[in-house]
Amino acid sequence: MGNIFGRKRRTRVTEQDRAVLQLKQQRDKLKQYQKRISLQLEKERNLAKQLLKDGKKEKALLLLKKKRYQDQLLDKTENQISNLERMCQDIEFAQIEMKVIEGLKVGNDCLKSLHEAMSIEDVERIMEETQEAIQYQRELDEMLAGSLTQEDDDAVLAELEALTQGALDLPEVPVESLPEVPDVTKEELEPHPERQRKKQKEMLAA
Amino acid sequence: MSFEWPWQYNFPPFFTLQPNVDTRQKQLAAWCSLTLSYCRHHKLYTVDIMEAQESPVFNNKNIDRKLSTDAILTVFEELRKKGNLEWLDKNKTRCLVMWRRPEEWGKLIYHWVSKNAMVNTVFTLYELANGDDTESEEFHGLEEWMLIRSLQALQTDGKAEIITMDDGKGVKFF
Image 1 (tube, each protein chain N blue to C red):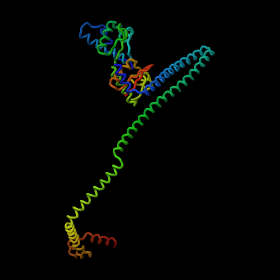
Image 2 (cartoon, one colour):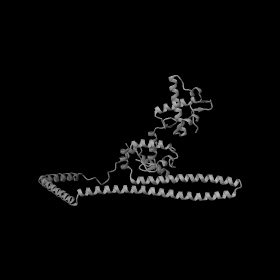
Image 3 (cartoon, each protein chain N blue to C red):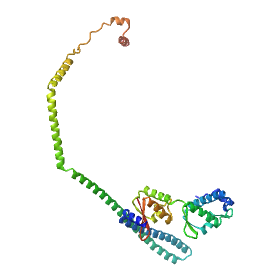
Image 4 (cartoon, chains in turn cyan, orange):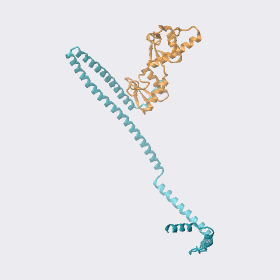
């Protein structure tokens, strides 16, 4: 069983992964160390307080010196942890970059093979052939169209002529205004609204 | 949040194994669920029989009743049959309690990993169980044996691979 897993593992976990893991383990150890020291610091601070209360100033001073030293250690550890983490991130990012490059390479190869399959001469030849075919088709069209429509063309033209002629034959729109209708009789029957308004205006003016 | 005891806990006969088969079955089932939920609440993964006797689960001081060692063993044996418990030694003095199956733990861990877009990354086991990032996760503080089992469960699914190195183990998620 171990063998199966072993083989499988080799395929999926790379050397870089192992390196990262080692770095991370180191970091874990440092973190544990850091935790230990900070706990110790807290304890010593309390102890120093107690010593001061008891009046043992000398001892308290000594303890504080030790604490100071450990403080520095803590700082150093912090630095180392960040170093390790940066290293981890660098490795991880380099892996990503490698994958990107790999991806680009695959794309490049693919493009290359496609280009190989499609050389410029081929394209030129194909384009030329297409052009020729188009030319040929056009000639055919012309031949076919030319023999058929000489009479048809005449007929179509004649019809068009007839249509335009027909449109021109329409009587012109009269320009002069219509003769005025004598409205005396109408006015007598019912008063024209406009006239009435005019009358009103006249009355107002008066 | 304090642990909520079931009503049976304050019921004196509950602490004596009942002779009637049906009653006994129900009683054992209740004990099993009580044990599991107690362990879950206190995040206990390994239980020592001697300690268990003194723990409040099997020893209710309020009504002055405690479950005998034999009865505890019976309950534990019942749990073992259900797959929630494993003995660490032949003398049955220490055992592993699995109030959540390795597969479920694995699922939880994997969910967290994929939620944080950490798939394809390497982790140390310490980082998973005790790291600052997992502080608020349920699997924080998971004991190593349980963690390894859940990772093995993930490994059989092809979602993770355990890496063994000279000092300590790591895991890579896929």
